[in-house]
Image (cartoon, rainbow, N blue to C red; front, top):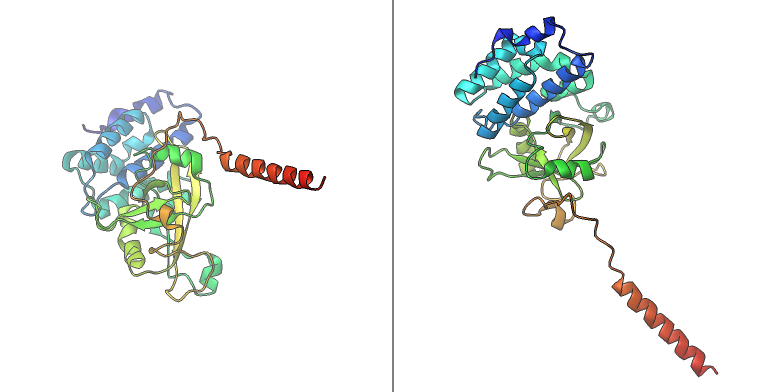
Length: 284
């Protein structure tokens, strides 16, 4: 499938509505999510390539599709099934202006530490990134139900992952996995986690997406001897049952909320009433 320069002729024909800017923003974020699924050697998985083809058809009327860098990169992915670091960086640089300013940094991975931490000389590295693979394995349902902007997330190393030895899973406090750190950020972040450096990661933004919600996560890594409260380490941070669950719990969106089991409370109440009745009878 080749992306031709004539695909955006609909723009000149007046087919772009007043929501064109919003669609361009949506298209840019979705393209980032797809490219963020690259493996450690630059491969784009077959599922992601199929999503890219759907993406190209869905947004064929946008000016974005006529940009030489975008067109060239997409055609290269279709032909080779890969994207190099240089191609990804050039692509993100070309589309970042379509995103809100606060999200543009998420295309680069690393950012400046938080002002308060920088002033105290605490944070070693800081990252902003768009979480990849949020729409697989019921993760969308988990995000909608349990993810909240500002929430902390746990970073779980997955060195046996078939796609990358740098793989890092993002897990909510509730125990549900919501995606992966993109490879270009995971390469350096994984080294800190493996060495036991403390970190703080939180959901910076949750944005609506055509396929799945878009998560933007901020992470700061601190020196090993940091005594700041609320930091986590790759060896733990929350209860073992949650932090080291073998797989993402499955959610049935049709299932009704579980009713609270009041059996124990009823037994205790019955026993209390019986004791009270016995005391009354003995006192007569």
